[in-house]
Amino acid sequence: MADYLVARAQHATLAAATVDHVKFTVDARPERHYVIHITNLDASDPIYARFDADPTVAGDETYCIHAGVAREFEMFARPVYSVGLIASGTAEYNVEATL
Image (tube, rainbow, N blue to C red; front, side, top):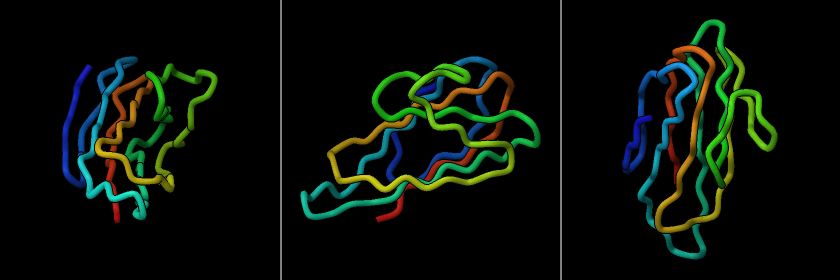
């Protein structure tokens, strides 16, 4: 498991069946919202994401980001926002927060 605390972006490769946590520190004024972009750079393995707990591979309540696909999630500002990511293989990913 890897834990990252970043201002805007993280680029990494998942260890097989192991959760990475990417925590963003952002300008968290109540009137602001931002978008988290998750890109799966792998050619075959889907990545599973969850914002409220640790994800599991193909688990309930997870968002699936298929191989070679990017997804966007609109969020409302909090002091630190975290996303957990997991894949069955060693998928490479990019996660970015945009205000």
